[in-house]
Every structure is written in C-alpha cells, then in structure tokens.
Image 1 (cartoon, rainbow, N blue to C red):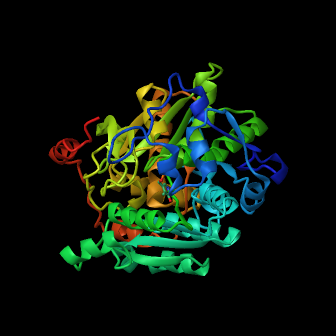
Image 2: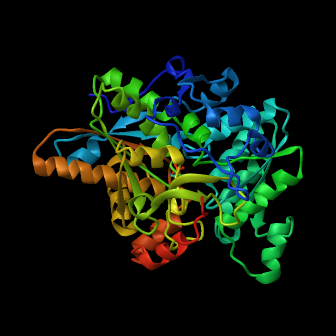
Image 3: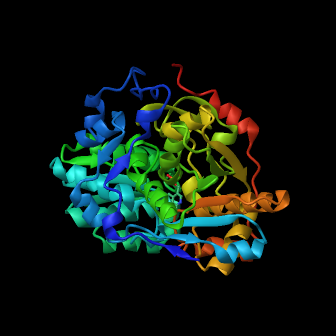
Length: 450
Ligand SMILES: *Cc1c(COP(=O)(O)O)cnc(C)c1O
C-alpha cells in the first residue's frame, strides 16, 4: 500500500471552489465599521484590488486559477497526502488515517496558497506595495515570498513581542525582500498614539492591523492584504481539499471525517469546503470537524453575531462566531489560533450544522504533536498540532467502537521555527488555560449594535 499519495503538476486543480455558490442562504454582507451600513465596493477598493473584491462577493461556483498563479504554486504544489501507517500502528486503531502535508511550501505552511494569488491580482491592477500585519510571522513571511515573485514591495507590521522573540521569521521576510517593522511603531498615527500612552507596549494583532490598514488608506499606491478569515482567502485555499479528493480517487478511498485546526478558518476552510460540496449535494455523508484551543474557543463558546474584525474598529464588521473584538486570549503557543473571530464561511457552516467544532487544551495537543513526530517524522506547528489531536481522538473512538473509518486531517505547517514552544513543553512549563467565561461575557457586551 502506498504511503505517499502524489499528483503530477498536470493533475493540479485548474479552478478554485467557491462554496458561496452552494450555501442555502447568502452570507450576511460586511458592514462599514463607522456607519454600520453594508460596505460598498468603494470602501473596500481603497485597500483591496477589484478582482479580490469580486471574488469576495462572487457566487460563481468554479473560478479559474490564473496561469501565472498556477506557475508559482507549482513550485511546491500539488502537495503530498500521506497515509499515516506509523501513527495508526502506534494507536492500534482500525481507522485509516490520512494527512495532507502543507509544510512543503517555501514558507512552511498553507499561507502562500493565498499570498501568491493576492500578490498576483494586486500587481495586475498596478499596485506595487502591500502592507500587512503578522503575529508569529507566518503570514508576513508568506506575503514577502509572494511579493518577491511578483515584484511587489511588502511592508509587514510584526507584533513587537514576536519581533523581539522570533528573529528567524523576520529574517525570512528580509531574505525575500520584505520590510519588517516592530509594532507599535512611530511610522503611523495609530502606532504613535499607542506609544505616547505606553512606550513599552508589547503590541497586539489588533494594533498591527490598524497600522497596516492606515498605511494602505493613506497611500494610493499601497494596498492591504489579509491572510485568513475573508471569503477570497478560503477560495484560494480550496486547492488543498480539491487535491485531496483527487488523491483519494487514486487510492480508491474517501474520508468519513475531515479535520483541521481553526484560527481565522482558512486552512480548515481550504480542506473542508470541497468535501462540504459533496455533503451539500447529497452524494456523501462526511463529517467536518474544526479544532480550536480551549483558551480561545471562538466556535465552541463564542456567539454568532456581527463584530469588528480588529480591536481598533477600522476593518469591516462581519457576521461570525466571535469572543468580542476586545477579547485578549491567554498567550498560548499556537499564536496563529488566537483570533477573536472566525471566517464568516466557517461560522455559517457551523450554524447550518455542516461543520462540528471541538476544543482542546495545549498540553494534550503537544502530546499529540510529539507522538506524531515520533511515528510520522514531521514536526508540526503548534497550530497544526490541534488537528493532529483531533485526528487521534477520532482514531481512538474508532478503536473503542471496533469500527473501521477513514480519517483525513490537514497538516497546515511545520514547526521548525516553533521549537521554543516544544522546549516549554519538555520543561513542563506549559499551562492549560480554561476560557475566562466572565471575560468573554464582558467582551461580548461591546458588540456593535446592528
Ligand atoms: C496561520 C496558521 C494557522 C491558522 O490560521 P487559519 O487561517 O485558521 O488556517 C494554522 N496553521 C498554521 C501552520 C498557520 O501558519
């Protein structure tokens, strides 16, 4: 039996799948952050290219992947899908476990799948500069990579505490020609205002977003790019699930359950929506499971409501599961999963009972990552480890029930720059945070009154 299931370049999907075409009712429209009226394309075109705004609102089911984008993606795509024989054996499960390995991209995660497409559409509309924010550095490095390929200058506002603690990610950005600035900075009004109040502010994703959006709003030649949450990001990530379906055809199998970790929802949406298509059209009864950290339980404890996308209330207001834009989660090691909101598409799928959500504490999540490293070899990112944990739980359930089942999970990225988190685990210094229910209730009181 094959361990590694590969596709040739010729077998790469030629179109993205847009699930907006298959929802039972349209997604609630994004609102202007000040007026709370539906956001017009005008508002969005100050920071995004028209092609991406069109994709954001499109109900066309299949959208062609431009050949220039295919060309760059083919550097690492199609990505391999593995049968996890080692893990299955260690668990003694009758289940078959497969995982899609997105760690093969130059930046080490799924994020370049959309970074490449976003850089391409911006360049095509004459934009030569992009600004963005990054927390742990994964998105900043992915967009820098994409910028280098299309001749776009990339300016990244990196949350100060990560900037100081994670020089390797910053150096990757610089290697690809990106410019990385510690946020809050004195290059924007938002940054200067924060620094006036607190010169030693460690920064936050909310502040970094405000700085990046401000630069895009103030400079005609500069646009803003977001690495998750938005519909067009999930569209670009659908290549993951589409490839998996082809890979399953090759081995004559099909999953009973598809699992992914969720931060903003893009890698989960990417692997899950092509399978949701089969479910919606009634041809398959596949379960779709989103895994989140207990410390930031957006889907399992948040409410489904309109909320701001950022702390500074500059980004459009969207309908999603949220813990409140003021919610500050504990500093767990899966930094990429610490977002207060969720992709509107994933939220809607949960609302329609097409997607289930579960939450796990970080210690058992790292236990899962260590078992995976020892049995399958790959050292995964702390974010990805949540999906590994989800898959192991499903495999153990199958064992208990004495039933066969086919499990697929998305291995969103490698953890080569996250080894200090593994170190904390080995030194037994990881803490498990229960979600602070009172804090969530307080934060939810500040939702916009729509
Ligand atoms: C950013 C990131 C995530 C979380 O973001 P999503 O948009 O939810 O996919 C997960 N895994 C890795 C490796 C990441 O870099």
